[in-house]
Image 1 (spheres, each protein chain N blue to C red):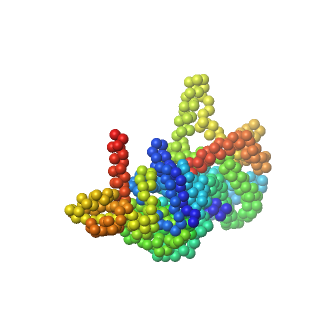
Image 2 (image 1 turned 135 degrees about the vertical axis):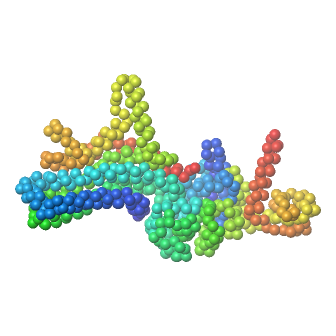
Image 3 (image 1 turned 135 degrees about the horizontal axis):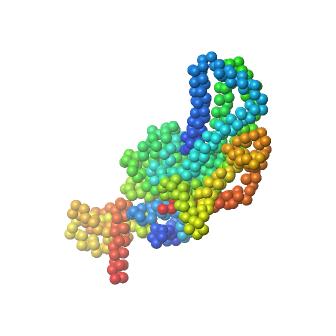
Length: 295
Length: 315
């Protein structure tokens, strides 16, 4: 199948800083991809390039179109929620629906009103009268009522309370996602999305440090918890990362088989958050070593 | 077409106060002042004797004179609308590409499949056509309400409003003059509109200052350097812009007549200035080399505004 997003050497510079550094990407349809990275890693810049909100170097094709040139045409098949509460504050809900209906060829008014029926948002509300959570619900209702192939969410639940956050992802998963659609999410609240992701991309300093399906992640990475006296033995198997918790040593391994490890202690599938920390710290360590070599 | 029309409605929704309420308030003031003067008259002179006298004196005047007074009254009453409309358009354009950058809702607008060109066009059309049309319709409604009130008053003192003032003037001709002046001005003012949109697209904050300060500073430097070099005070950029606004096809509808300058906003002062003459003047201006230069400048400003709009989400 043709990929939804394919990038070859995607690069974005701001003066001397390289925000996105020769990224190669291939995202097939029907996936929920988490784009995870520390602050300033280039996530938002990469998303902006994908959405046609910024110019870039390198090759990038989204649904077969060049986003920098064809943003308007591309937006017929792509939706995005860039941040919470960016809906214009002066607009009324019915105006927003009229507007989207006239501009978006694939918008269903019925669906949108159906989604809104489950919330406290009424058609006569002005956006500025709504709470942050209600604005997020409204935006999600609008977006879910549009039949597109790619949905991009950049920190969609930032600043919302836990009830809204949970509901947001539940609605997304139950009412929206299907085989043909692809969802690309960035967020700092990794724990909230890890159970819905099918694919994982880690990005650091503008480079991709991990790109894999969740199944592969579970196969490849293993977390081992051992007591102190077995720590030395565990260290010999070249773990990616080590940390201590309640006197136990926890090691994270990349590509070490479960048979090799199971004799030493308890095995877990690492959480995305732990894997993320391990990867980030790991590459910091490598960098430090590289610097050491140069010196 | 569907997209453009909903984008135009969107501009109206956001700026209802400026587009509709403002002219409604002016029209309302006209009507209120008329009613107040009627009540004042009735209060001082309960038999309406003076009013009766005035109607009688008026009826004695030749119909042409009454027609001219009415005609000028219609045109003259548009002056206040014109001035306020100028301010409304000025501030509307200054905010047109700035407000959604400031409140970050630009990210929402850019998530819709409407091109930047179409967005820009919808804002320019709002300034050139939609705002003048709202002002015009409400001006006409104001005229009609005032004519009804006046007619009732005249009927009240047994006069005949039709022969006295309604039938002696062709209001459509006056309204067409106002409309032609306003729409012609929209074209004439394009370089200024273009500048305002450009400023609106790039100003990091307070677009008003960015729109006015650079030309002012430039003008002062221009004059100063001219003075140092030649000890003369030649016209500077502000002078050029001022002259440009003054030269609008609307103002020049009444030009020099018998060697005497008779200039008022869109008002031909004597019968010799038929609207045919002023329309020719208007077309002369719109098809002049000056207008062509203005359009080129406007195109440059608008292209720059479009480029900035395209990059507005960069950082």
